[in-house]
Image 1 (cartoon, rainbow, N blue to C red):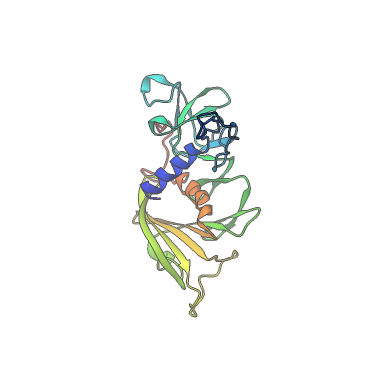
Image 2: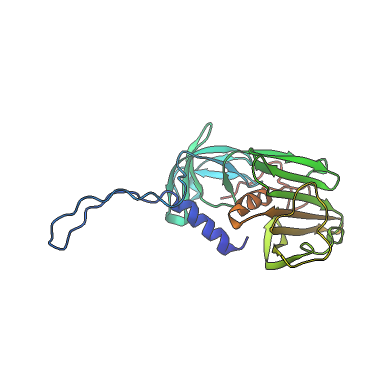
Length: 268
């Protein structure tokens, strides 16, 4: 995702705990009007929800909403879960959270934590990632397909020796709408988004045991001369993109830059 999208996501995260206090305002004659009923926040409430650490390097927990290294009270590994107690929009955005053994503040960065609880996928070749507990996966010869319990969207995680193995970027009959750089597991790849062309009458996209939907996004990564990865997402509308970002922000792979060290230095 671009920095603009991530900034917008962080802003949305913080906006979820917007003020709902009542106010009394003067009328045209100067007399106070009847108090206005609280207006609900247009975004989902965050306080009381669960968040999971996505970052393979883990995350620092602070005693106050500031990045001062002196106030670090604990570390949380990838996959650790918290209950959100409070939200602060200052300083870039912070969440006060409670874990099993520590309570403190973490940065409200959607690349580092995500809403909900997650399971861990681990492949024989060392690739691992987090996916929502409300999803499942099926292993195929080329990688894994992640599927929700409800809904048609699906995610693909494939590995190969080279990018050429995956064929041309995108899908036949789909038109590319955006292209950007994105960092996955320490490596920079290309994120492309595509929309199905209703008038296309040529060859259909590569067959899968899941449907190809109107929208498709994929990230292509080249790790070195003999390792490449494709992360694909078949989806129906842009509101479903968050789950795709959660998957690729949690990926690890046993290669330099990508594999989390035995004693990682937590992020922020």
